[in-house]
Length: 158
Image (tube, rainbow, N blue to C red; front, top):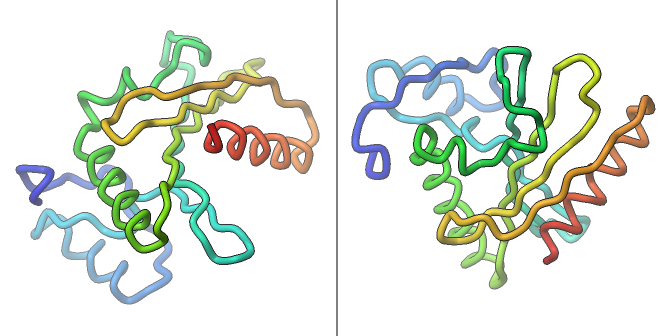
């Protein structure tokens, strides 16, 4: 609650629990306002078990009039500031543990028919935009996964 200044409402409850702690926090969050560990979308690790980056995923839907190219975490920061602040704290903790900077990025994808692009933005330590790339994906899911990982690592290595 330190960085939220309020109890947090959980809009998307966990349906699957990997740990007893996640289950307990999910069940009690409506009473305590505590966020459960599922708040972080993805931590990407390498083969040496080092965190390569923190990823936040944002979906655009039919209701969102802004095309994918116009999406930015800056559009969401006012509403989601506590989430980005907590993810930034996680980044700092991981960086201290590993002794190196940990990149943080938002990956935008669309579920709109015909929109076949991905946008990745690198977020700086002061929650500022540090870089972005937008690229098209094709019909092959395996190739798309490879391309998204490649582009993520490129933007996170800048």
